[in-house]
Image (cartoon, rainbow over all chains, first blue to last red; front, side, top):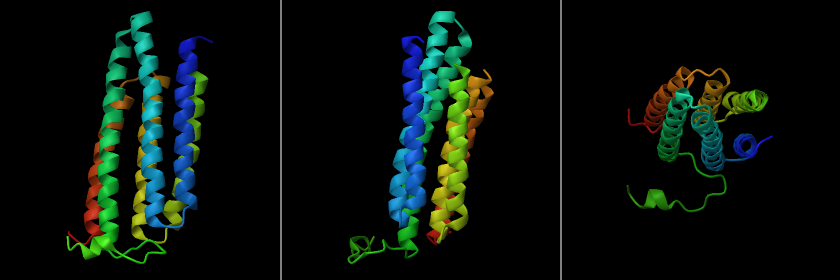
Length: 119
Length: 85
């Protein structure tokens, strides 16, 4: 087992563990906003790390075996991870805003500064 | 080396099944939307891994397009829930 394989395994393990934490939070948290807090950040982080494992493996294939497919795979995996990071953040913000506008509140909520701010 | 990728894909598939539980149970509509968003993210991550396992770059291209389409659909569902549509 070379050093590169160890790095790729560690990246894959970090990604799968953070995805697991996000899904556990989705199942176990009591509230819409806490569920969104768990899934959006943990799942994005985990997916970026699994993509990072793919990028490292593909760049290794490109630089050692001189396989031109490796460079294309690395660039496309990087593009997919970048789109994933941007779109997850924006869509989570949109869902949170829509849920607040449709009247869903956190369960022990006492004050609502967003409604007082007259957006 | 291939076995690690397939093991990671299997873990992600199990996580998709667990997120589907919240998709079915979810008490309100935004709960179902964030469960669907989680399933979409896991599908994109597993498709990138499939591109390595089968040595086909078309899987990663499909993942990019799938991510952008799921983003647009999530924005439209959010507009609908917020009552702006």
